[in-house]
Length: 160
Image (tube, rainbow, N blue to C red; front, side, top):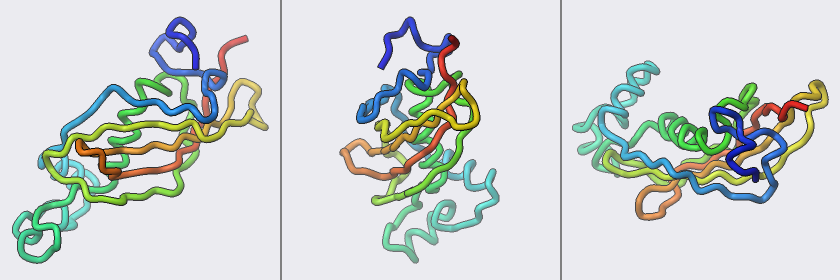
């Protein structure tokens, strides 16, 4: 990994800066709220009562309370990683695979995340870019893994 002076002016790392096998512990954390769940579910037109109906959850689910929307959790996990990795240096996300939610996340839980650099390769079509594969993991305050995914990102190389 590079020092602060070689980062993008916004703070992101360039393709050359990523070292396979490195794991980054992100500094940002976030306590999730009922409002997060309601807003995200409503903005994405998701009427699933498992996320937005406390009475339904209390009377008809094994959880007894609303689960955080898994796509919110996925977005939060990746968002937490941006300041330490890709802000200003991502050209595009290419895809996500192996998305898993091994444990529930509830209102009031605090999320922290790590990113492992799993692979990288030069772009075949663009000499100014490369592809980096990240493994993002999100945990709640007690260390329980609540989300994981592999993400492929098209990353800028440092100017020659």
